[in-house]
Length: 77
Image 1 (cartoon, rainbow, N blue to C red):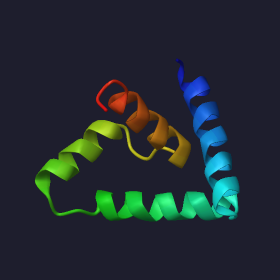
Image 2: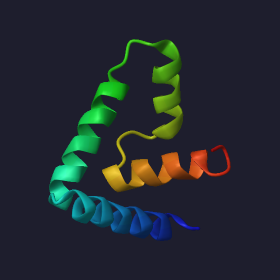
Image 3: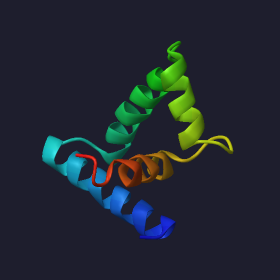
Image 4: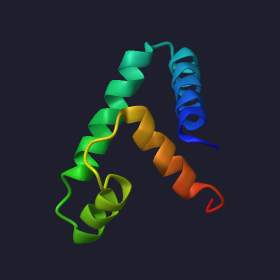
């Protein structure tokens, strides 16, 4: 799966989550972004290191971040 395909799958998943929960896609994105922000601001060195691995070149879009995390988790759960 290339990056574009991953982002398209994430976008579809966000739409499904929004529909199932009766909220807008923007609300789903906002909630996920808030959770990511909390995680990125963690004082835990292991958590900070993990975020540096996820985003070595700076900020990614929400969809890109989810796609990276999903790719890393594939086969681990």
